[in-house]
Length: 123
Image (cartoon, rainbow, N blue to C red; front, side, top):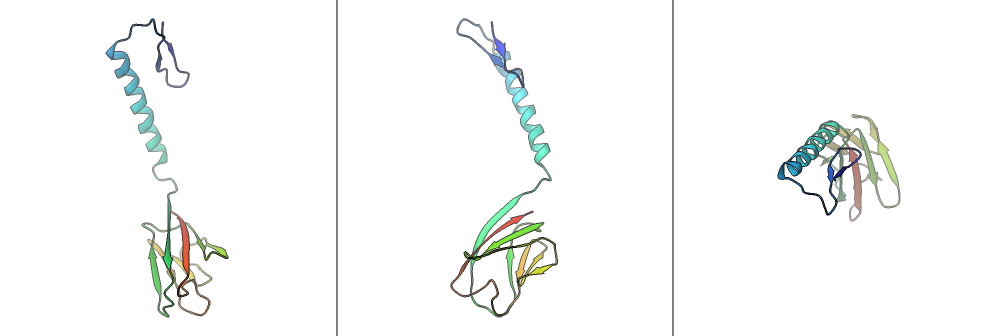
């Protein structure tokens, strides 16, 4: 006779067991319900967007899109890492803005020509 899994009570048959299509359908419905609940629990939680850009040395403002406004932005130049935590706050010439971040022009800015910069934006 079949036993059942601990968490969702899914069928666990042994070789001698007969089983019915309705058993499978019942199990699939339980799995579907559990996955839907997981999706609901994850909705609205933190998402991460990561990417990189190549510095171009421009003296004008540069905007990088992240498909959402970062709550925390980590930016790595390869030799150093810094974070911007607040929307509108500028750290090391980087400002979090709606749907991305902006790099201010100036010497030592994170847009030096020929350098690759990596970022992780927690949305």
